[in-house]
Length: 586
Image (cartoon, rainbow, N blue to C red; front, side):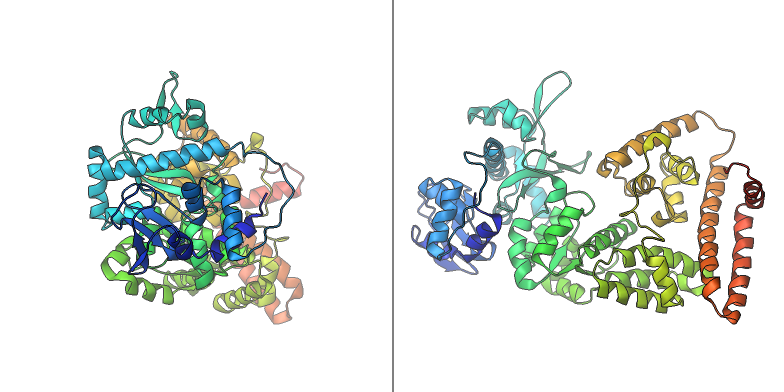
């Protein structure tokens, strides 16, 4: 087996123009090179070699790939032989790695997905049914030639895909395992993608392993991804990384956006270091992939509430991997696609140059909302900033963050650092999940059950509380999924909690003694009281270390917080008295 890092070294060292130029007469055309296609025997210059992307593409027969693919298609080599031949030409010695010999058992899946990608691409170009897809691309200012270079395709309705794959000798079990077809309850087989514009998803070796399909017209879901298969795990890949990783190393930065069209638009504008997650929040594995290629990540998400939540979740994950994280803020109502279409590359470059550190962006938003103007507001601001400080795995970054937050919130740095320590205040990343056999019966559950009733409760609850106020990690994940209307992204544990809550919501709908408004008010009050409890506990820890003057100030602050807490939770005094007398807690 050839080590992956050696394969990457060989690919990056190869002179694609020189190698393909041995077989094709190439002439420069802008930043690309054009010539007659060596695969279908064309005489016109429809064959393009694109050095920036390390790929070739024919606009007639749609053959495409990298330097290894060229040797495989032109000279009939298998993949390892193509790598070795390229290595020989660039003077790299390949060390052999011990491992299993013989063909990769997953090869039929790679072949099936590659065949499907080629067929979908031809449909986009040639099929009358794909006229709507071509019109949609035109409305987004993407030419058919640009779409073909990016490998976009079209999945027709009906059974044309199944018929074509059978005609090419692909068996149903392979198509099923590759996620290209679906078996219905009645046993019939249908294509997974129907009536959708398809974006191919590549692995790090530039092999197509899956698709993301955008619906044309009305319907749900808007984007449909391939399922996880033996060759594709959506949490372990990033869209466009197979091409962007080279640009990332040169630019020493990565631009992370939310969707495939954003990647397409930015790439066409020259920002080739752009990638996107695959329809979910940024995962630990995806952050690790970025860490390999760039020291700095710029988050370029939408600036609405959902976009900001996704921005800060991604930012914390990247900080755990010791990356420098900045946030670029788009004008209100804009997304990366519309910004570049209207203002061009210069407009986006200006936005990127104004990107600020992810913690500074959080502070900026909190300042604008007036959080630092009152003591309760400062406490709430700290609750929102602490997860980002804790996420910073780089010790210098964490120290700088602690200093900055202590300054802006008006607290002593040593006090803040005790709060930051995960032993005293663990984050969701470090908290063990309790078993779901005994889900907490709490204000958190009440609010989630209300959210499941849909609008306007989803919005009302989201405006009243922050995700950090939900202590049970599975409930926090459900809260964020309901706010973003994305329950499909829940992991197994949170999905089980979601199902339990759904059942409780149905039971609640059947009848209750309390009105939803009363339930909402009581639950919010209890969460606020719990926050005040934490503030009082923090003061209790500070008092033994304080000077006499500070002790008096802290005692007064504690008294004020206790009064505020008791107003929020009137039964607190009764419960505490019962506990002191040995009665069981509530």
